[in-house]
Image 1: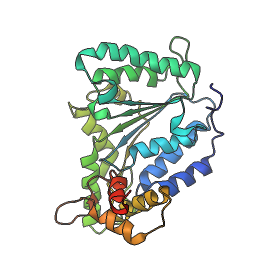
Image 2: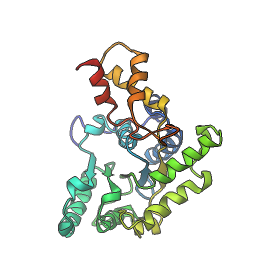
Image 3: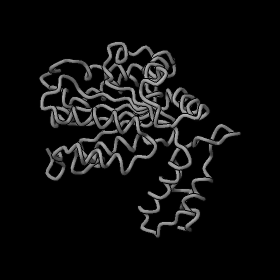
Image 4: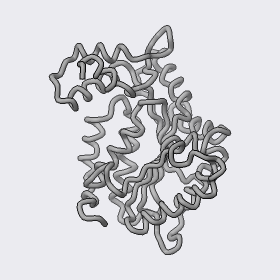
Length: 288
């Protein structure tokens, strides 16, 4: 363990408050992630690594939640040496080098966990990852006590993907059109979680296509991130205003939020890009 890069004493109440204060419009995520991470981190001897798969359209908070988890585990949060992010098209861009990438990935995961069992790995753009690399990851997720003398049961694996976003968005729209409250949507509403993993399992362009990770039930939860509504985008703008240390201006927040694109074209209920590019849009208004 590196000095100054230590584990924080895990505090479920602090984690719950962080999610409540800093995550907008994602009641399902808050509930499931709080329970899953808290029970895992307070278990001194888990029987397998924690594996969570985050699904949803752009800008809905998938990366953001991974970072919230990290800052409740490590002193340095997402700047910790033990918080490792892989972005498919950046780290594994060439199809003809999959064998090399697979060997490197094994080495990276094994090396990090051998030196620090509570390592956290985030795989972004899972929908663009080569399925063979996903199978490489599978080795470390199983209920296996040790691989080459190293136990992986205290590690966390988080997969981020846009796949399943359409299923989630359609469900959110259906609830809205039926006059139902967004907060009524739950993990099992109309088989949503099942629809998500069936979609990614059967999608040939998905990293999870016919993956044994799904077949062998090694992902603990497929977690849906709902598309954001205007009020949630407005909250994102207010958070950016606060981070820039400028005077809170609710009219400005409303103006910026309304300039973001929404869908469907006629109703304009859900944000196309979530909170992505909100900061850039805000900076145009305040002249930074």
